[in-house]
Length: 343
Image (cartoon, rainbow, N blue to C red):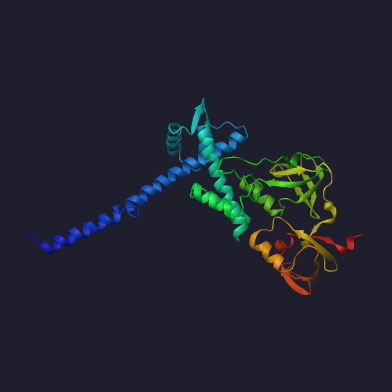
């Protein structure tokens, strides 16, 4: 074989370029793969910590099998990460059950803080549907640094609760407490306010969303038995299975603080009726809330149905001399008292 210096030189530079792209600091393929592997380990570890925290709060004992069944990781990867976490004093194995150490508990609270702050951001600052908040926050919670979490909290006004009513831990791990009772435990004729809607498991949460039940709405329990829970809220009747009602927490009123019988949703207004706006539901957040206020849906404004859609949705409402079309989902977040019902 005849030695060709030009070919050798080209090959040399080719190898150099390849090595540069593979081992380039921070941006090379090697470092990117290493970072991805490290990030995967971090996600696994943080998912374990969060799962253990929630179960410890419910006094549930968690074994390796429980973790394997609950989390979407292979048994070998899970065991490897559990060993690392015990070495780093994040958890201990008590007989067959895993328990968080104080260090692990502190770390878990910061993951939960990131998750709930991000859900609050999604609800207040974006147009994403509430069905998407949890999944998007699950992804983002692993990316936020402590400094980014503090910046996000400041942007949102340092909220104490997320859009489901769950408390948001502070940067020091302190959590606001609220007293409440599961809706499934309330006696008939009990009046209270919904203060929390649990977003897990997903199948139950979606049933609650489908019923269009609003956080912070006042309710009155009409019927409670082993088959169903019936309650009135914002002029409408809701019927839930006890297992679904158990995921809704209510703050019971000692006295009837709000005459909820006179409050209804704009979506219930008929063509021949007029009403006065009481306010906007706290379910109406961010840009949607600002838009409705700008359009004149303010407390005290008189409103009526101007035009019905043959398909049912949207309807046109007459307010301050202007016809404005709203979908039922939007109208359900505007609270009214019907003028015909007023004494």
